[in-house]
Amino acid sequence: MHDTNHSVVTEFIFLGLSKSWELQIFLFLFFLVFYIGIVLGNLLIVVTVASDSHLHSPMYFLLANLSLIDLSLSSVTAPKMICDFFSGRKVISVKGCFAQIFLLHFFGGSELVILIAMAFDRYVAICQPLRYTRIMCSNMCVGIVVAAWGMGFLHSVSQLAFAVNLPFCGPNEIDSFYCDLPKVIRLACTNASGLDVMVIANSGVLTVCSFVLLVISYTVILMTVQQRPSDGSAKALTTLTAHITVVLLFFGPCILIYAWPFAVESLDKFLAVFYSVVTPLLNPIVYTLRNKDMRTALRRLRNNVNAAVRS
Image (tube, rainbow, N blue to C red; front, side, top):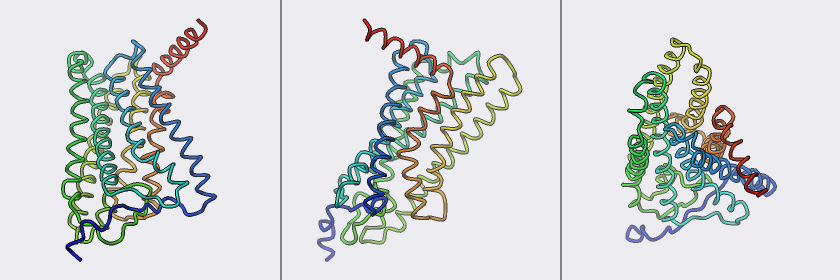
C-alpha cells in the first residue's frame, strides 16, 4: 500500500458552504454580486490613482498596490467558488490545490507588508513631516512594493516547502470551498501533526506580530496628531480612520483563523468567506467614503469620461 501512496489521490473534493440547492442559488447570486463589486471597485481605485496627477503620492501609490493585491487575492478563490455552486462534484486537482495555497499565501503575505508600509508612510508624514519627501521618495516606494512581493513569495514558499511532498492516499474531502493548507495537511496518509503546528505557528506568529506592530504604530501616530493640533488634523484623522479600519478587516479574520486556539469549523468558513470576498470589497468602499481626495478624484474621472463620451 505504501508503494502506491503518492499516486492514489489525484484530486480533492470541496464540501462547499451548503448542500441545500435553494441556499446555493442564493449564495451564487450573493457572491457573484460581491465579486463584480470587488473587480470594479479595486480597478476603479487603480485607474483613478494612475490617471489623476493629484494622487501621484506615496500613500496613493501604496493604496493602488493594495487594491491590486485585494483583487488578486479574491480572484484566487472566488471565481471557482461561484462556479462550484452549480457543480455536482466540487473538485480540484492536487496540483491545482497547492497552486491555490501558494497564491493565497503569496498575496496575503504581500498585503501584510503593504499595510505595514502604509502605516510607516503615515508615521513619516505626521511625525516627521519635514523629512517626508526625502524618506518616501520614488525609489523607496518601488522598493517597498518589490519587498512586499518578495516577502509574499518567501512566506508562501516557507508554507509549502514541506507540504508539497506529503503522500495523499486516503480521504480527499476538504470541508471548505478552497484549499486551506492546515486542512490539506490533515488529509495526508502520514503523521503530519508537527508540520500542521509549524504551518499554523508560522502564519499565526507572523500575523500577530505584524498586527501588534501596526497597533503600536497607529497609537503613536494618533497621539502625535492629538498633541499637534492643526488645520490638517481632521483630514489626518479621517485618513488614519480608513487605514485602521482596513487593518482590522484584514487582520481580524487572519488572527482568528491562524492564532485562535479554539477552532470552530462553521466559524472558519465564515472567516474564510469574510477574508476572501468581503474584505476585498470593503477596502475600496472604506477608502472612497472616508477619503476626500479620493472622492474628488473620482468626480474628476467621471467628468473626464462624460466629456470624452459627449465629444
